[in-house]
Length: 128
Image (cartoon, rainbow, N blue to C red):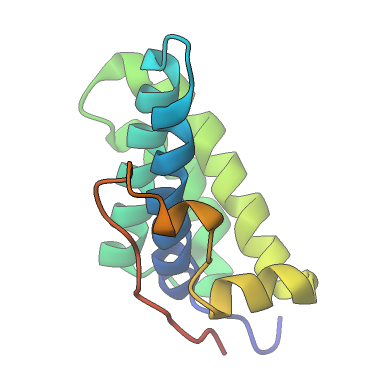
């Protein structure tokens, strides 16, 4: 595949989007424990992808192997599901112009300016 964006770059932008989603999650009036667990699993996967910086051609295999690296065996199922989601998002960054533009602009969200949100993400990155 030509001109593939490095997975680490896409994962950095996805981390920014994940941070923005915290504002929505905190406003929900229901038990948010499952949301928090899922977001934690995804955040750890994205951080690891940024740290490991796998080659684009090897990213799918890296994601398939990621669940086996989980310290908590109970998280291998959720980690596997999140790995699939991240792979789909990585592919979207290559095939869907609007999604790539959104990531290029720092994955902006209306929640960023929410005063109920603890932090905002101003880490805008350009993905080539």
